[in-house]
Image (cartoon, rainbow over all chains, first blue to last red):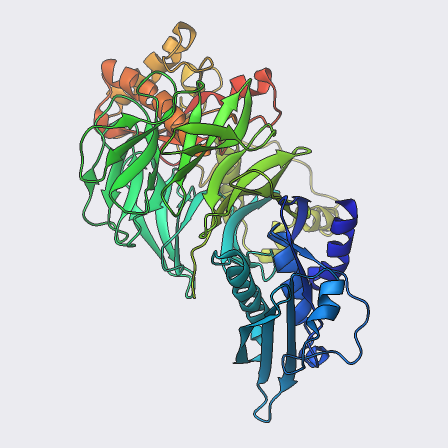
Length: 422
Length: 192
């Protein structure tokens, strides 16, 4: 494990200069596919090592074991004939070969091909033409292709994550690639920012800002920085959650006393009250079918997770184990619920199989918060505290694969994994 | 603390308003100039100092530009109205008996000053979900608001909101610190 981390650190090192968010793998899947990713012929011309990004992506997923290769001469390309016996002897089950070249029009061309070494079969590939600044994005798309062909699940290497960094008295809402690279600040404030939530199209973030000395919900358009107040009623406005079709937000408001759930349009129109209790009802999360809302409520005396139809009606209690279960998030396939449970004063990430109601605690940490599923449902991103500092961590839904993401000299919190965008 | 900062800022603004040229805003520059100004005039040797007669005293007013001469009872440390924080027990949301006099005093002030408005910010300790803690802080600010209304303040004078665990006054992870953060703060218009 240690050797793997060291090898990965070496592979990733050239790109960390621009990455504010460093990712460390702390656990990997039991069954990892051994794969060889040859250097891409001519990739030095790109300035960014495409094959190295593909290797780091696959390794980070925890589902692949990327083989260390001796220097290959000549470097193969997607057009080279493949000697499957030779790659079998290197114990590779799969092989990626490719090339990169500068075109006459100043754009670049990157091609690759994936091979099933065990079957001796060509699994096809793709050719991309791209501008120089799209090299990283292209490498992530190649990793997505390989991941999907070999695991049957869509890859999330091209997706982005949002999170809040607190440094001294400053709060920054930042967006980065799923590998922590390409970090950009969408909003900087001297007051807290919490609960960022991606619109399903990945173009907007809803969040809660305290810049008016109280919680107010904004919808922030990422491309132009335009901010619209979605909810600024008398009292507190918080916990925004997008409906899967992006037309509505579920929110928690105190305008009518207490903290209750409402539906509202992202432009602030069309308010409709959802819950009528004397309890704190908050943290709404839509099920992927858009028909059910999961939420946290202490109507039974302790905070527990409930669900109710979006159309209105009775709420059913979902969690029964323990005295504190909060922050529900439904997996993209609707089968699992991620949430935070308190055990002996420790707040830990847990998942529940919604069909069997079987619950599994996934971490042994002290202060897990704010779980968020990757759009393919394989990993859950969450915030935790290590050594007194806020960091982000990710764990696979089966608890085997673990990653940690940290920012130098700052507290990171409130992560939200963005949607598929291509 | 917030009150003090505001008062200090108001005073500083008032003082700055009295001065005429930009360089005089630097205290150092003013100090350097004073000895020269004293030394410059050459007094007539024969002039005999005369006592100042009644009615000849020039008035120097350093309070010009300051708000009302009488200190606001809301900011007078000797007045109970300067106490703005109500502390709550763990997992409890009712105003404890020891804080009742503070709430009563503010209710009386709101009754007697119907134009006055307050924002009550509820807070929670850091443990657990940030959003659920917004709900718990709201319960605390709502409790203070309810009591103010029971004691005669008007609903329209009071907005109760929650800062959850986001604005702790104490940042260590222990009970002494958490107790300081389970709190409702009363802020008057102009203070937030």
